[in-house]
Length: 102
Image 1 (tube, rainbow, N blue to C red):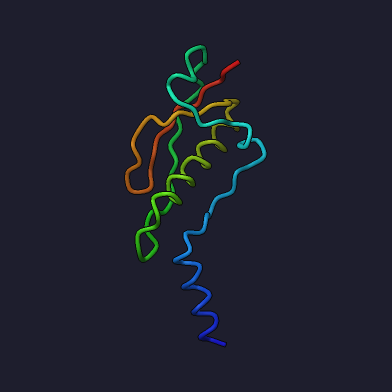
Image 2: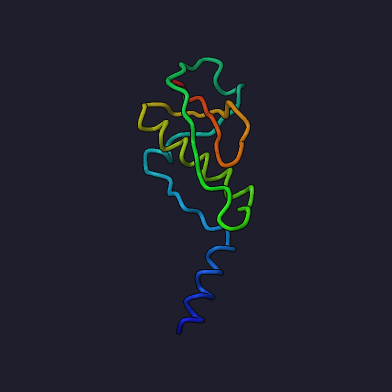
């Protein structure tokens, strides 16, 4: 039994699981580019943070995806509907600008 639990824990650790969920409101926020925000109003700058290492480095795809999900959720709470990365990802932290586009 103990070996099964250990095997399960190790499998989860190495599977690159997503630890954050996109909220219903966050699902309405699009990740855009500078070209997408020409006629938009800057609402706020948000910073997202997630674990980039849990004993070993997590996959870039998982970390980048989680950062975007967190930013989309925060942007939705502020009334924005588009986010654009404003900084490069650095050890599980990334900045985004949140915009309201009509």
